[in-house]
Image (cartoon, rainbow, N blue to C red; front, side, top):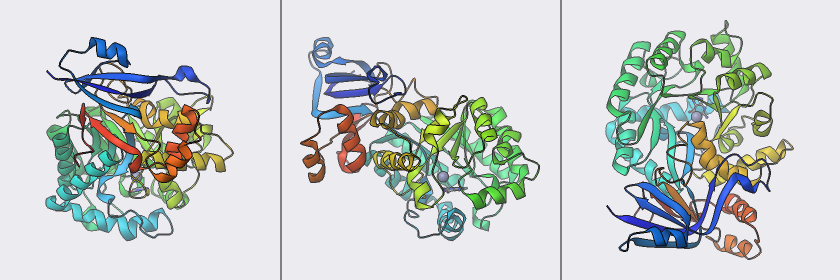
Length: 435
Ligand code: GUN
Ligand code: ZN
């Protein structure tokens, strides 16, 4: 068994920071050490203590003066949309119909799916994202490519074959039966293999008939531990169309609730325009609203009330995500930069500790995976990221006047992107330098 000692400035969170001076919400070790064995963090603490505890032949990697954080987590993006990013459209539905659906049709080809999967994981690693939750396309081939590549790279990934049986081109439709059967086949082949997690993935109410929603509900009953992912309340025209398609539902959220899809493993992309009733229903169910700021701005979908939803008497659980390719960046740093600006427009503050909490422990909690990822705790998987706040000339110049950890994090978030990610470790192995 080989042991590696990683040295650097360690930062990880214990809970959500309630204010910028909430120092009890995180653990910061100026000269810290991580002992890594068999892909897991064996011990963590001051470097001197870790050095003393390490075997004599330990390999040591010194990342000072850089920060070491848990690997970043992206809770919502679309693996088949790498070539959709930056498509010029007026709004969500035009963007889906004009660019996104035609592009996803290409994923019926397993060679294409495998090629894009390789690029997808390269981008995750380049940007310091060690766990992501992705929609594949409707084709089982796309889920096979997605999970096969995750397995090869030893990454902890969540994903699902999209279920969609109406309001899209023929090449992108399954049926209630094939959607069920193929999702079951993906679960049987991939769930629990390596670090893979399969998610039940009805795309959204517009592209699933009530019969397909019933099948998704059946899967959720059969596999209660699986994540469920879909979209909710992103755009006003989308909401209107959904209400027409499901006239018996109280509102958009109720469409999913009526079909047994509203629960603590449910991840709802966007949730921008929820009513108070819908927010209450989400809160009661423990469902997660996934904020995708670069996408919401790019598609003009609206301003997500992150702070308002989290300080309600009945708070809604919140995660953050890129939503590539409606989103415009793979970077979780850029994502939180845009999240910050959206809260500014709403007259709210999002402090840098909160942002970094969301990218790490917050997202791990939203996935109910905090016992494995999202911290630097001993016993968890050794996925972490090395961040350099002076990575570019502009960042280095600003760093000259940075005096606090909060300011350093804010600089990383405001000017940082993949260039600020010096190294990404997956299960204890550095994987960015070798890309
Ligand atoms: N709603 C249904 N499908 C999608 C998608 O691919 N991207 C976004 N942003 N919203 C959706
Ligand atoms: Zn999405």
